[in-house]
Image (cartoon, rainbow, N blue to C red; front, side, top):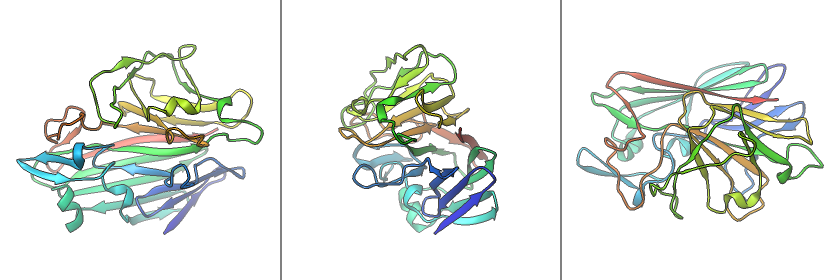
Length: 290
């Protein structure tokens, strides 16, 4: 089911399937990618309890092997609306027979959306209701239309970090697993990434050591999108490889996928978050429509 929240500036739609952002409109302009299956049928799904790919779709934990598809299971699971006001909504998921087959934890997962002026705040909350330490990752995967204005093209846009930085690009194999070959990633003028379709021919660009805010913009236009992710260590930038897809995904992540040809032990994979029994984790990031 599609739910709507709005204020004087933004109108946002949320799909209960995955708690996925479905639309972001300001002054009649749709900023969110609308899921054309020719390029990518999704829009802005949420990632939990794993980000990206597991080798052979498997991992181990406490001596047992489990199967999980790319980006976990929240993105295709129906969430329950726990509360809603005119400008906010909270959706949640608890463990069930289906999740326990993939992920052997009693947990609570919530995603809360709150509007404040021209900002959409996204809060992930994870509760470990089990009696053992829980290992997981969370992240966002929103796609934004490019161009945002008539008369402009994809290459008229660039991504600009809030501050100059010297990020590192995480090394990936051609099948999108870690290869350990991390390399410095040069930014134009110290903070910019010019948009070009062929920049994604090797799939996603995943960075670390970057500024914790980034803006999609064009010097030829007036509309832009700013994404801020204060406590996310990784940022994915992506559109479907080898296409002229008219969108770009800006993806704040807490963790990374598996190493190539390694079936990871969830308890020892370095980038994953660990949450002791009975404790709760929160992570807030924002989308600002400028």
